[in-house]
Image (tube, rainbow, N blue to C red; front, top):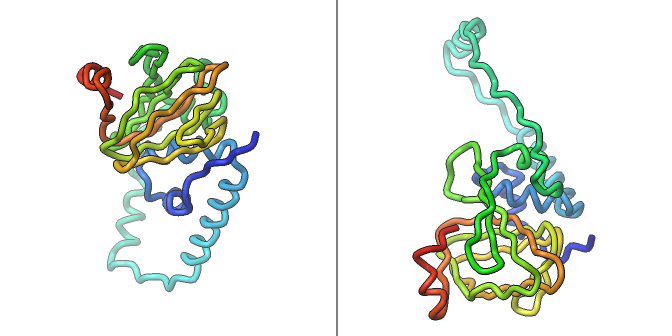
Length: 214
């Protein structure tokens, strides 16, 4: 699998630092499943961060901190939630931890296009879902009011002369105005992490805007 499109170094650095919200981490982690070069880059950044922490001068504990910590050792911890096995009906090229989340049912949002929500275990500003579009479909032209991360799982689409196939990562924000076209052949299935809303263009887009919420 040849991957041509990757997250920017700023996004990978934020992922390594743990500063992204869960929905964004899911999107980056999905790309990392198939991209060895980005995995190596993130691993290198984590090692740099670890070295910086190791060189930091330790701060003194507050008075009584050790005694308070020891006193709490006898307290009963809440039971841990049982780990869920990966869903058998989730795409295998998703990270294992994502396949263990709860998924909603597929629902049609436009002709030949369906979405399936992924229910994250903690609230946040980023929504995550699977999007499936039939081969040969031309998505209605649209823009975004927030960030959008797309990880292609299978199939392929084209936009602005560029091809996005399995493993590729596409990033968009409020300045992007595009109309992806799905390649003929297999369905294109992608993981989408999105903030804000989509703004559909044209007469048909304005007609369906009240009824399509991703």
